[in-house]
Every structure is written in C-alpha cells, then in structure tokens.
Image (cartoon, rainbow, N blue to C red; front, side):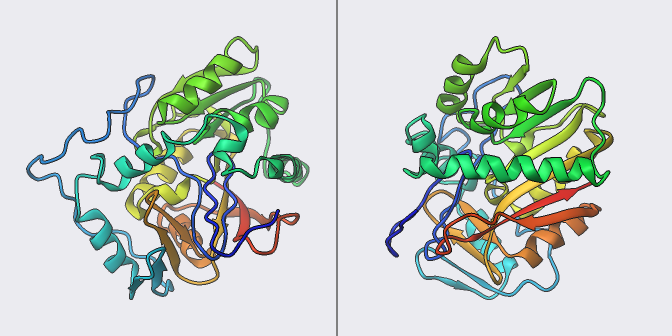
Length: 305
C-alpha cells in the first residue's frame, strides 16, 4: 500500500489510516433497531439539545490535534468544542456529519476502504488468527449455537469474510442505510446471517446474554468518550458466559487526532485502555495487526470482558 503524505485514507468496514492525516473508518448516527437513521439535519435548532463537555476524563491522556492543525490541551477541551457546535445528530453535529460523510462513499469494498480494498485479505486473516488464539488460550468459549454481531458492519465485509466462517449466526449493526442495504441484498438468505440493525452504536443495546463475540472494528472513533463507555457497558451485558468483546482500531502514539471531515477521533493506546477501565472492562488479550504498511497508524486488537 503506497500513500502520498497528503493522502487521506477513509475506510468503512476496514479502515487503515494515514498517520499523517488521522482519517479513520466510522459508524455513527442515531436510529432505532431495524429502522434507517434520521436524515441529516433532523433535530437542528432544538432547544436544550447541546450536550455538555464529556463527563468521562481518562487519566494519562495528553493533548491532541486535528486535521486542520488545531491543537487541544486536553480531551475535555476537544469535546467541548466538537459537541458544543450543534445537536450531535444534526447535519453539522458530531454523528450527523459522520453519517453524511459515509453516505457519500461507494457501497463497495474499495469504496469503504478508501480505495485500498487490497488490504482486506490480510486484515481478515489476522483477525481470524486473533479469534483462534482467544479460543486456544481459553479466553473465548463458544456456545453450541454461537452468535456474533458485527458492529459498524458497513456492507458486511467482515461478516462475510470472517464472522460467518466462525459462528453459527451473525447479526449486523450499521446506521448508514446505503451501505447496510447493499450488505443485506448480498447476504440475506445465507443460513449464518441473522438480523440487520440500522442503528448507530451509541443507540445499540444488545439483548442480554445474546453474543459469544461482539466485534467492533474501525468504528469506535466515531463515538464520544461518554458514548464509548456506555456502549462497552451495554455490550458487557450482551455477552454469553465465556464471550468477549473484540475491538480492532487504529491507535496514535500519544493523545488523540481528530478528523474534522468525518467526525472521528483516533485515540492512543493509553486513551483506549482508559475507556475500558471506565467501563469496568478487563483486557484479556491484545496484539497488533502486523502486516500493514508502516506509514499507516498502528492497528490494535483487544479482547475485553
């Protein structure tokens, strides 16, 4: 994979990012399960809709920057500026901008991978190796009728290429109607494919004890810190006994990098692990994606419970 230093890599469903730009994949948006998210702009101008600064403060996180060159002294300062502009689900809000951005990409593997569809194979390969290692090490104990959920599923790339090969049933969660509709048209009817949820992760609540694995890849950067912690907490309740949450995500060296175009934040290792602690999660295993170009952000895989 060759990237010019000025190239921004946007990726949906598999999101390698240039370390010089901070662009990553997304799933945001707001909708009830099974329904499309509201159109951008809905809710603009509502009184009392502006959220306060983030309530979650992670210790040890330095300041950060954004893709416009702005510098932030703290996460609190960054979230105050990002969330104080507009209702989050409006066209100009944090989640609304994200959904609007991804609604404009092609509903293909190359489209959701920002033109770098050829990295999909090695991504899926190392993800499968990670899941296999979790089983071999006893961290993951699959039930007889195993079930996984693909959070931020996009067009179903990970569902089709990884999860359906390892689980009896796989559900998909995605707020961008165009992308998930493409996945539904392609995957519906497959015996291992379950339910399609047109909903953002900040509004997704897994049924209690439903899943062996909750797979969250290149999407958590589109959740605010508060919504991350709340999402992880709900996911923990959604696990079967012996189940795990798997997070695969870009990490920066220090602090954070905000992408102003698609409303996402690349967090450091310290930052992500702090969010796990805030949600009361235990890290069972973590590793790096190894076979990726050096000019991209490092990619971490975590198994937590």
